[in-house]
Image (cartoon, rainbow, N blue to C red):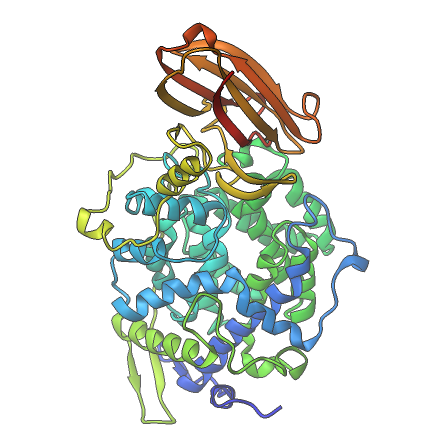
Length: 550
């Protein structure tokens, strides 16, 4: 392979002698390791992509583990594991390392790519005018401990060689857009591991240094300590996996504020499983993190990214990077590899100087002189017992800069499309409420979901019913694995209650008609409740919602 200029410049240079109180890293060595970090992420996520969430609470059998081919790396250009964090790099490129959290929030609110879990909840809050840090507070965000910032924090260490405080501070700017408590600490830990990998080659030592960047009393820190201890005592990674499962999936104490298999702690444990049992080699590190299951593309991506930062891009053979596109652009970003590396290098130079370091030497022989830095972790916050909200809202001038509609506006448009004159309230974010072009063979369907276990979503309309024999005609459906209760109320009086599920529907649909003759010619308030009854797949699917007369 004829290497592009940015890879040629990354040929490894030896680390220079380290005076007390500071460390020295040649720019050539920095480039090699920083590029290694990005390539490691790309290899890990592309390798694991076919397996994502296919293996939950079980180890993937070895014969189901996918094989690698060199062209797979280019699939990473379309992975959210990478392109979301490039939104943060864009904000830093424009606003510098001290950019405000509000500015970061506006940029994230204006991102156009699809999101899930904590990212989606946080971005929805931003688009609704809830400014950070409240956009991630558990009062407004049901996903505070999800994996999101953990898989997006790589950038924060790749631009901070040997500077663990920088990923902590960047986590407080970008991680707080969507995560809180352990969900935030997960990303700060990952960023600190990357920062450590510029000077450490032993994965265990990298993990120990990363641990110093997060609150010792957090459950995430407890998980890291456990993995360090368990891996030292148990040579079999699968036996260690079973110990992880017993504590971090089956013990209710560690399921607080958790959304199950997307939780940062369990997935962080699988990242460490690969790093600590992978013998410092790429393939076993990726395989173990992937076969551990759950988010089995993001976890090997993080593990491989940290390891390849420690080893450098020059360590990666053409088998992995030989077919890497030199022109492809990461989805939803302006970044190809050349621009990505240039931006990261400039931000790293800025971070070194801002942290009290300096850059010595001339062109071709520059050295980053990096001060010793003791991390100052955040104060402990618990997602299941959160502190008070900050009451942060975007000002009108800021809201005008947010060009993407929030879920309220999008849902109102969807309701109007199905049933003009109706409105929706008490809507929960689960299962992505809104318009569906098709559902179970029918075109044009509205999805609603209860706000929480005790609060129904409500479709309502105030109108004067026509004279004669008006009736309410409904065509409604349910998720194949769930059901829900329909409650019909007029002027606050319940007139009907109906289970909507597999036992009451035909081919997934229920056709209902309610006689409203008693209120003919009267002004009424009509309410249809999507009532929870067990909190499992309780979305309501509405295809017809109509007042008709006979």
